[in-house]
Length: 444
Image (tube, rainbow, N blue to C red; front, side, top):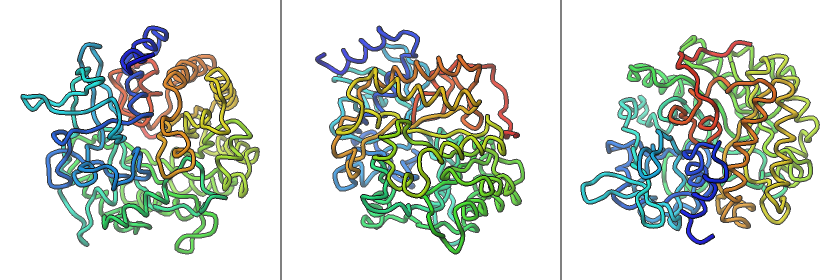
């Protein structure tokens, strides 16, 4: 179609019910953005909140390939507003790609903007360095290393186990670079704690609670790699659950507690609930049976697709269907050489999965696939999935929610264009806005 601008404008015209902000956001998430030196942060010593690499790299190159952006980190997220498309406030997670047609740079007056095909298309805001990032733990570790915040400060992301026990080509999910991300940060000499001590987590949360005077941080997520054996003598439910127990005992009701873990047996899920977890994310990753078996070989070997789905439904009986929110990686459905070859086929498959879960009152959510180059699917598909797939997915997602009378899930902040803060996909930007109310911790 020629320029990327022409492609984006064509999709905005063809799918007018998808917010224009979401079209740009999905394109930035799937393909990344380049940063001029004028738009990089001064790491933890500056005034801009830097990218924390909280679990995956979410970059289109390894650290050595990012140039200046590996030395002076880009911002954690950017906000797009205004420009010729009159964009409403849109929070976008930063995924660095030096070859992207999108570029963030300062103009002659030092004002940051987003440029596409050489033309300025939006003003760019960057997150200010939060006060709690300026304080260190008693052992000298930074709050950003132990308890980084994302989604414009809404979510505290606690990756308490930075590697995955699904290891090697026969077990690792084919789109996931959690293990490589760990290795590259260690190789670069960056602090990157493999297993976070519970007392360190509590101390970091105390600092956040003390200095987050506006109470912008509303939820925390406990997550990390899959545990097939034990970590520190604990199985998966007990390992992640004991952090939740400690947090809820120290800070009762302060944050909405969420855990991302495997789809575990009913008794293990009950332990999460007993420990104080309020929202459970047993991610199903990709719906199609053949693709799940190919792309998630460890999950297929240890649990299996059918059992995985059964456990998701079982967990709704413990947490309540609204508080079970499994993620899928939007776009891997079209990854060569095994994925669907047409957008129609991919959307039909994913919508089948959405209808399956939503018919049981469970509302999945998704992360827009970033084809990290150290993963098998990233190497084979550096361009990711077509932008049209992502735009049509937003349309199908909203329609399926409406078909089953569901609303936006708890723990993700406000929905609607101009309001959403969820930064790694546009599903919240694409849902109807609602009257602003203070979000309460979810109850089963």
